[in-house]
Image (cartoon, rainbow, N blue to C red; front, side):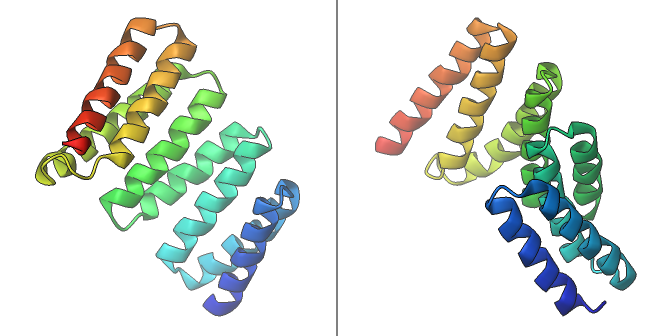
Length: 164
């Protein structure tokens, strides 16, 4: 299977996933993954694993999702995409009620993003605000209301910085 064929199958899998046909998406994406492994195109293979992980997550097949996310993470070409993989993994951990693991992933991504936030003179903070909100939600689910409030205060502080 050539890379164009694999990409076409990936697009079909994405469409199936978007329409909620997760089982069919997994089937199609597995065909694409098997075809792409022959071509060894890391960037495309990374997206295939990530997309299939999202479908597995929606099906409640969390261990399969985590396995695919680990494979996708190893193939990531840059730090930003690795952060996106960690966010996806944090979502899976949250759905599994593995709150400490989800918090650890969110914390790692927040720490990775703080450097860019400081470099931008506190101007580009929407992504970081979303991360703090998501981590606050996990803290709340875990019952750590005080830590959730700390993140919510950080969100307010960041919003005020972006207004000035």
